[in-house]
Length: 238
Ligand SMILES: CC(C)(COP(=O)(O)OP(=O)(O)OC[C@H]1O[C@@H](n2cnc3c(N)ncnc32)[C@H](O)[C@@H]1OP(=O)(O)O)[C@@H](O)C(=O)NCCC(=O)NCCS
Image 1 (cartoon, rainbow, N blue to C red):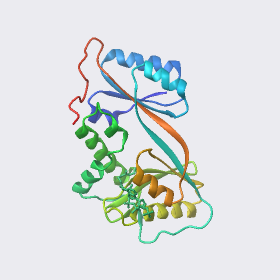
Image 2: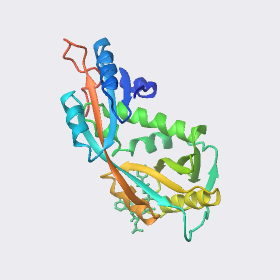
Image 3: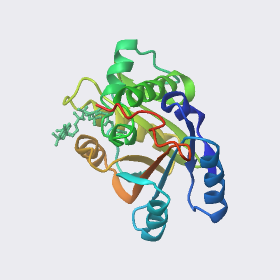
Image 4: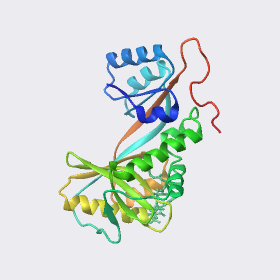
């Protein structure tokens, strides 16, 4: 399925799309039609073992950006409790802290793409932080540090984990709290997708009991209007 992603468009400045696997010939035809209308950005996440789709994407001009890992923790056994963590419907962050959270998401796919300007990527992540903490998701927090999440079909999905006051065990306490809360709410699993080279996050998730389920390859396409070779968005990446 080819989905339009208006959220990305506000920051990338071109029509933006996400290809949702399984990628069918009709999706590629729709993407081709969109390319014919002007510059576009498109992204997709496929299973890391799917070489055939990776080759097809490469032939279409997609670039491999990074690897992400789907992690999960199954909700059985002992828990470490909620402790001093607040679980609320929203968290009001100072704008300076929103910007600091956004700026530190440097292993995210928009920061990893050399064709996307750093400023555009940080602005996109700041909007993501604001959305995630202002009602779109539930939030577990310790002061200005948070993990946002939502429950879908028995699974608690982590949207964003971000700690500014680092190396004090806060990430693990936040994760412990939402795991315990999910257990009490009769959820079956807690899942998250994180970047494969995000060592700090992988450490924190492992300590909280998460295990890898599978790996995903992330691809981006930034296409110029046919006949126009100028970069559609952001060649000024620093
Ligand atoms: C990843 C992150 C949430 C960790 O927060 P934190 O509160 O500093 O982590 P904790 O203090 O709970 O540490 C958990 C474990 O990870 C280890 N760790 C933390 N940061 C680390 C780093 N930069 N490098 C290596 N190990 C690290 C800690 O030592 C600890 O392990 P230990 O108990 O064996 O010592 C924080 O670095 C962050 O917000 N990063 C930017 C946002 C991000 O990448 N979020 C994840 C995307 S969903």
